[in-house]
Image 1 (cartoon, rainbow over the protein chains, first blue to last red):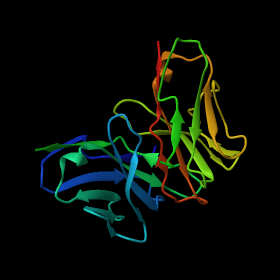
Image 2 (cartoon, helix red, strand yellow):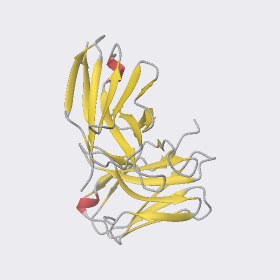
Image 3 (cartoon, rainbow over the protein chains, first blue to last red):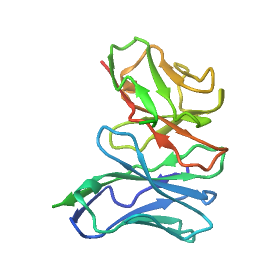
Image 4 (spheres, chains in turn green, yellow):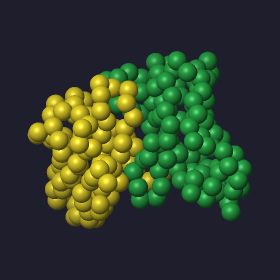
Length: 112
Length: 114
């Protein structure tokens, strides 16, 4: 079946470096995507979203890129900090009345 | 803090017992979602409400699971005759609108079935 997935289960970066977390999706009907951050023992926290009529969106220290041609999504974190250590999930909506579907997540570890 | 609130945070029960969880969404949010998450996995959709109407249930959801949102505000999720495979984090989320809105999650209820 169609699902959201991630290329890498774990990512380790040095503090101050930039991080890139990737996500591949297979549902070509998906047109709204969200990145969530989840710290241990907590629920997912919204980071940034992007709709399919855009290919890039920037927030504070974060940028999401969407490549609809290859069905790929990425989250870039600038100047990664220890507080960025968490599991990151991409999630997709294929329509307004379908539930948000999550991938399996990437664990980001920041090395001080 | 006026975020999504879940109670209890942790629940330990014996196999075969019934459990009930509560979720209080952000007050103006009309949609409320229940997800389940096991270790190392992403949240898995269970069901959602728009106001008091339950609009969708996952096909994976056992008949032992039932959810209610009687007045369109808080919601309860009940699991009857719990099994060890029900052990997971149960997450509640809410949103405002008619779809395509970001979901705001609570901290979840961690269920352990012994």
